[in-house]
Image (cartoon, rainbow, N blue to C red; front, side, top):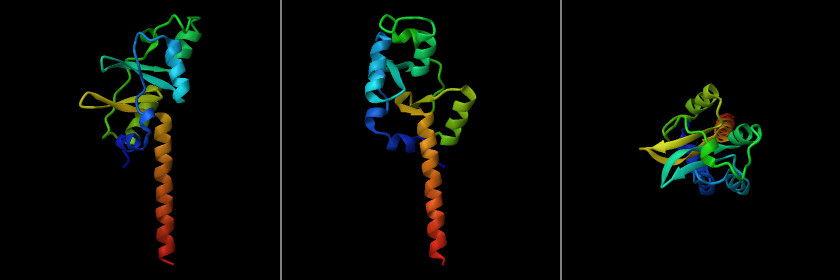
Length: 146
């Protein structure tokens, strides 16, 4: 069974855990997200994880409320109550958790140390990769017995 550690091992290091300060402006965080082509940033201070800011946080807590992206701080809109997973957790467990909680990102911790983040896209890609490997193995098996 595939685990979160499999995803983290495949991810490029520049997409594992991009962080911003809670005092950063939302606009600055959005610029980083656009530059890195990611949908979230981890919020940390002095190496401590505080939460995550996502595109959904921005749209619901800034745009829909008529706030300014330059005047609003990341700490004002970040999500700080997301469940945490470990590298040993299964992809199936993460998908169920995301579905139950209606979330798209999960921070990954090992011994209270932030290891990275996994998105629903990461989980879907890994699931597809697993199915493709199974199909290839079955084809190879069938062809070897002919």
